[in-house]
Image (cartoon, rainbow, N blue to C red; front, side, top):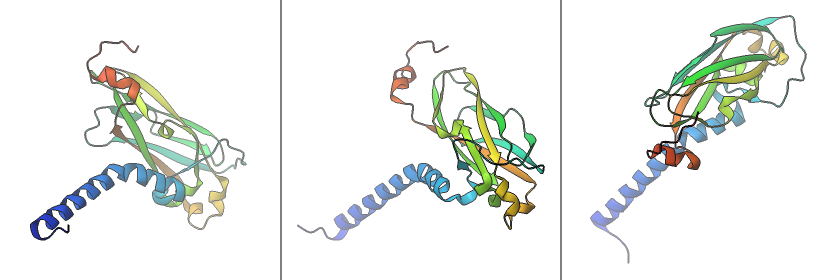
Length: 191
């Protein structure tokens, strides 16, 4: 039996609303995946180790941290900038604090500016590779280990980059299964 008139319009409208809701729900993970794969928007690469040369030329790396609207944490870089030689491995820390009385899970999205530096900014280890869960009142130091690929000095745009900014934005996500009971009023102490 075919629908017609108002019933068909309602069904089409509901379908569009459901589709748009699904796209909104998947937008952050899809965008992060797309940027990681393509380097779009200054997204840095991920490597297992730094095997490159270390140049005498230095570069300044600045660190920025922000929270998505509604994320209850406090989040900031421990140091706002450092200077290192191109190819040298750097280690920076970000501090996160959960001031609430319940566990909160988060995932960090990241990028590098200027965008032309994105393909040359390589992360070895980073808190942003996995979801983070902070217990009520918990404060943590989260490391990121990185280097700037020496190939940047050969790139038409990259060779003019003297300062790179690494930015993170934390988004609240659903608690993993093991933490769901804690969020429902359990009095278990995580410390």
